[in-house]
Length: 168
Ligand code: ZN
Image (cartoon, rainbow, N blue to C red):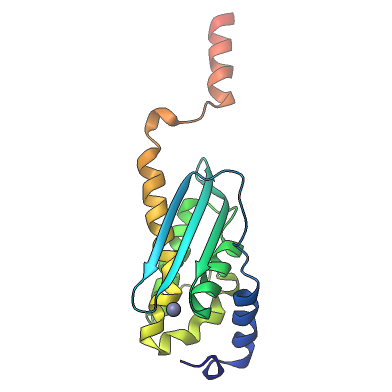
């Protein structure tokens, strides 16, 4: 597939993300690290994510692959930090549906991911766009498995209640 086949506006967005990937950085903390591979095209990605409670606080995405896989990972890294896991799962599912030609709810915040919509016409390249998302899905699964109920952070609510019981 030639990038020239995509809409011109989308081309610019895509190339901008390809040339300056937003996730190419070192993050302070890495709670989950995962590599992804798309054998169909040879794209590779290494991702590190930091979570706080149920929110993705930061993510790095190091891509080695075609323009579409790099741009998709960059858009992911730009869009998702600050969102909850629930919101991220909703966006990821909607993105998957968009890439498979399905209707997507209007209230989904896709950021610049819209620019990848044209890729769905080239079925062999859909996996390039999906690679960082498939990898992230596994990272979220790993994160959920590790956070056992007794890892719950202490809250001020509990402390307050404890004090009031003690003082009464
Ligand atoms: Zn690719």
